[in-house]
Image 1 (tube, one colour):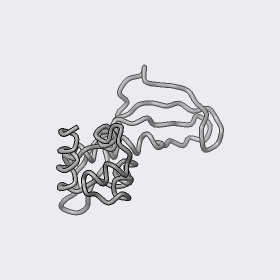
Image 2 (cartoon, rainbow, N blue to C red):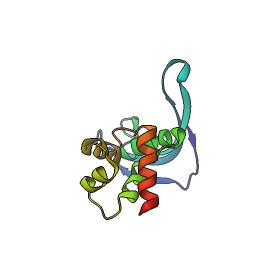
Image 3 (tube, rainbow, N blue to C red):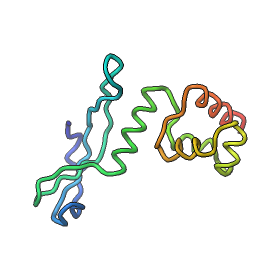
Length: 130
């Protein structure tokens, strides 16, 4: 991991021990995929380092940013982009308009799953039609 900027430092309370911690924004390399299909991607994430217990960790925001990096690598819409396409529609309305499974749309928007290529194309078309 590489520290991007010393100005990107904030103080907080460690979630693990309650001690004094610092949050630094760092570029993190991570492997996506397995075997011959594995690629190394990177995401700029906030990393909390505790002065007292010595632990370093990323939280939910880091997971979201890694997920977005995978979406970009695959050429797929991110959860935020899907929610933008949905706009004022309900999740149910988006699922119906695209012919998607309702639970699948919920998983895509929460970042629990990445939509397949065909669903991504259909989502983009819904966005263009709006």
